Image 1: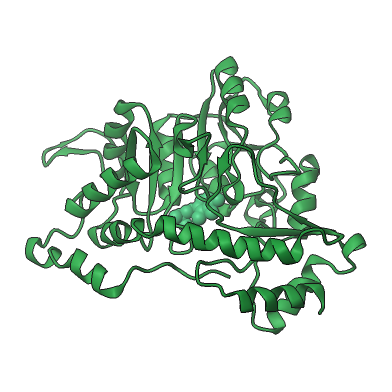
Image 2 (image 1 turned 180 degrees about the horizontal axis):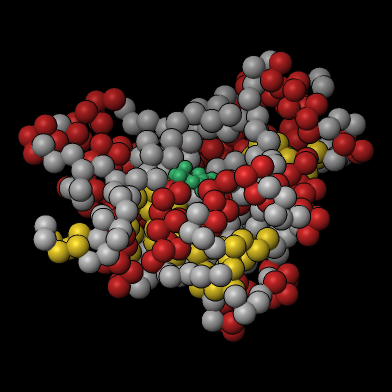
Length: 361
Ligand SMILES: *Cc1c(COP(=O)(O)O)cnc(C)c1O
């Protein structure tokens, strides 16, 4: 399915060597601060705050904005987005997705706003960009906060602008499986300088000085070994994205124009990071269901993922609290989508094999 990017071994060893001299292994050390600066430049954002993982970053983003009540979001996402809302004691209100890019359907947001709504939490699914302008307009009109789950969208730009510049806060994940990784890790990006300090408190137990603890914060700090991995990996991101692009082009050559298969369309003005290659199988037109294709690939030891399936609104832990009838497009896609293996080193030979199995050749 995926393969974690690693820098050359010697480069990482060189980067962590100084840690044996300083013995400074975590708590906003030299590597942490270096990565923060490099990411501000790479993502083209005013401020970056690093975290031990993307999920905790998302939970702490909700905390720093003091959200209450209801948050409008989508169920076509990874568990993290919805759990971050409920674990903060808030209620997710599920909006359907657009059939063309799988991001939140902006035409349905306003009808879901109540007097309890405090925020919108959209997801840049597969690196596809949400309609950020329309979401911004709605948020301003109803005085709502916006937190983007940008876990899939590292390095994506819209008309040359980094995707982390929209909404109040954006969350990026640096998990091992993502386009850019720091083993585990994550970041929040934002424009309000005050947020930087407040996040620092939240992720470091609210400690101002050894004898002054002003906030009941948690622990979300990124350690130096992770930050060093990030520092090494960042210099290979562009190259990796270019390799991913060529893999995606190979897939497109083989799979576009096939009846019953829907591929992602590229979005105007958006430079993609080619993070995923989802295919939607219409069983009536294609002759095979998504599950049949998934099984045929598995038989050849090829792991494609039903990503995202099931919808988060249908998780057992939510115990029938939400109905997927209200998000029919999300339901339709979740039942039919498969993301194909995609990583920079995937060979043309492997892409051909995968496509032959899918097409029954
Ligand atoms: C990976 C991911 C997260 C969580 O990030 P972690 O760094 O794994 O905690 C959140 N949302 C989405 C959409 C993701 O893909």
